[in-house]
Amino acid sequence: MNCQLCQNQLETCLDGQLAEDIRIQVEEHAKACPSCAESYHYTRIAARVIAEEKSRSFNPWLSTRVVAQIKKIESSRNSAEHVSVFSRLIRPVLATVSVAAAILAGVMIGSLYKPHDNTVNELPVELGYINDADLESFYLFSED
Amino acid sequence: MTDHEIIQQVLSGNPDRFSLLVERYQPVVFRTCMGFVHDQDDADDLSQEIFIQAYLSLSSFKGESAFPTWIYRIAVNAALNKSRKTAKNFLTLRLNKMLGVGKRELIDAASGESPEDLFIREEHRQWVQDALDSLPKNQHTAIVLSKYDDLPQKEIAAIMGISEGAVEALIQRAKAGLREELSAAAKKNKKNRRKN
Image (cartoon, rainbow over all chains, first blue to last red; front, side):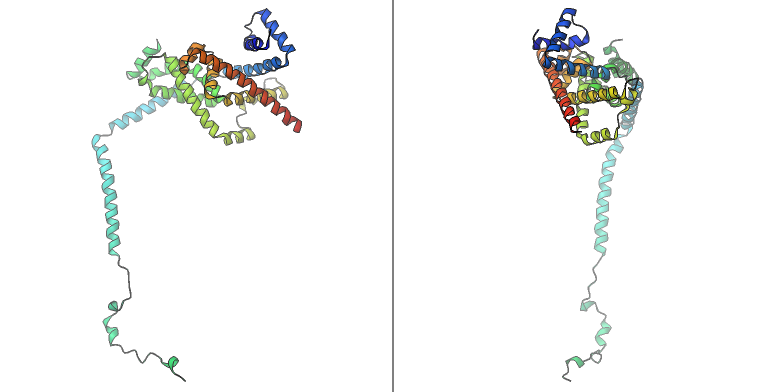
């Protein structure tokens, strides 16, 4: 038996589905050939892990969970259908109008505000009659 | 009752009947999921997602292929998407491994085995899972459908939409890839042990 033939038969051999005489040939070859022995070892590890994962039991309540989920989806679908066409149309219109109203209100409130500036024009007229020359000191400008 | 009759009943407004299909195909869908996610709880959650997805697209099932083929296709696509997302959460997975999260199977398996045997078994499990996950998508799918679901090559070809010859080639390449990855993992492990 050559390596190619041996490696092709490894899994069948591990499954126990190989004819007795071929199984013996495979095992003897694997004992003598280090490369095939390594393949035999790793194939056995993989087969054992896969068999272990396959044997895990599934959730027995899955169908109940799935049906409950489906009912939830269906009820939300039905409630969505019951929403009238009128409200479906009016909702975006209302949203648009309210946004426009908010912008308009903002602009109006903004225009009410006038910044305060201390220009002469805005000074009270009475100030013109006050002679405040005496109040000013010329001391700083004088020589002595 | 045939699958087709059940589907007709579901489509005519009797969603409760879908539970019959779930019960019928849950074992195969679960096994397929296990081949991709390798965790019982994740496989259960993924199975639920697959059946919900199948229900939602049931009206698009024209009966051109057999129902099992159709559900397998949905399962494989969903499982591949899930494993891609899991790969993105690689950091979380590593952290979980470090913290020992997800080692429930290890504790469950403590049925008279020595701690050393248990450790080796867990190590082998990790090697095989990593080796499977490192395979290209189509090889991974082919090997899962062949080894986890025990499907004949003809059916795998119908599910994957390729020829039987291509399936055979994919399975052979996947087996060789698995052996290589396992051998590399074993060598790496030996090196690490020598270092320690």
